[in-house]
Length: 604
Image (tube, rainbow, N blue to C red):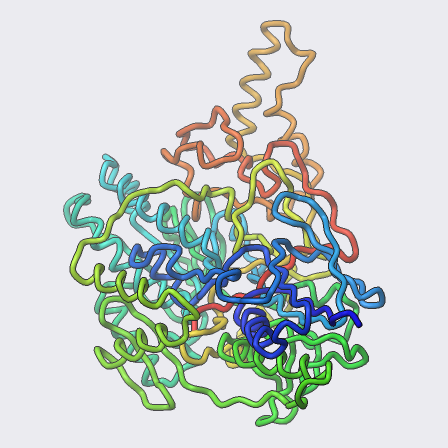
């Protein structure tokens, strides 16, 4: 008799825990396959420390092959699932397609970034939900400080040293807290103009920082940020993002080259493509994590709407702590469905919350006991070390070195602006040039103009925040990391004004030389811009460097194709589009095609 085939989609907190527990339960009596875009599990709560130069990138990654014995790793992203045929279709990192057959399927695809219908955000902001985005942000911040130190114009210097973070949940709060310390340390080696210092602004429509936490912890975080010099502006958000800065909802225009978007998540659109009952984008499951009507399909983590047995009629929030525990329950119930053990419903008890504020500062309430200062910092780091599946010694060593040695602030140039667009379904993977990004199902709501009223109305925003509250250090932040809606967007290519000007000049030169027969490539992209409705922003573009970064001296090398717009103050050419090469449009989405993503959790 053949061994049962178990396929797990996603290796975030839920998927990784499912695979680990099943490996132990099966003991070689089942074929376990894990489908994931990367070969590592990403411990998201420590990602801000990677962006701030405290931890090396590999410290927050755990090898799947090394830590999951008897589990077969398949690198790829699920494109669709044939529930009747019991097969999962996927595309590997090099574009080859494959199929996995299963007897039991565990969906742990996680969540994706969410965009709100705010003009310019998709083009001029970057998210903070994957390792490539953290590496890019570190390079970007370092570059802006270095360029500001060499700038002759005070206004340019001030704009380059202003960093705007939208979303005062876990991710946004930690990014701003660590970012201020990082840039303050940098300017000691690259002094700015007299009287200037790096300026970090934290925005949120909520009434207080970390609205999902105990008010005492919120006050601790707010006080620490303000003492450090971060401008905390509650009840304020971005009304429009432009190449030169952001217009706030209170009417103020803030010149900046950096906009970090940490404003919430939504379930991975893979769930929507299945045609099964949903609860606000999440697959409805029973307390045993099984999909009704499909006993061979289980779902857990952010992709699943799991009944909260402690609060009848409600579902567990999208947090890492829930995902980690649901992964174990899913594994036990999969094994029980194959005759090993008994099924059990998912039950939980919150352990508390921790927020790392950089240095020795933190806010925490382990088991409901509020802590701040050094005690909270010790608890926070101790919790992270205990919760990480690996690399504990290396992480502790990096913390020790950071305490006694200055940080190395250098640009590595490993991740370019165009490789980490805000409007992406796969922030865990840097986008490759020359190949269109796989698109999500067109019905999936995501992208500017696709947000629902529930997402934009303030009175409903609080409900969403409560749902996304994060337990101890592992969490999918409410109102925090970036957004990636997969809305109904045209895959067409849109060119920027700067590129159009260059194209026009080249056309005139070609006409003089009698070379008008062949249209310059630069003109083709602007021509295609007409295919898009005039009022719709170019949402399929990463928009270049964090918040308008490329203009004003940003190297054009950060683009998949080097154009003549190098170091020009004009708006950035749209060669920084997800599709890669100019004039190359992504393939239109199909009904069951979308980019899956591994389950990721916004810090804590």
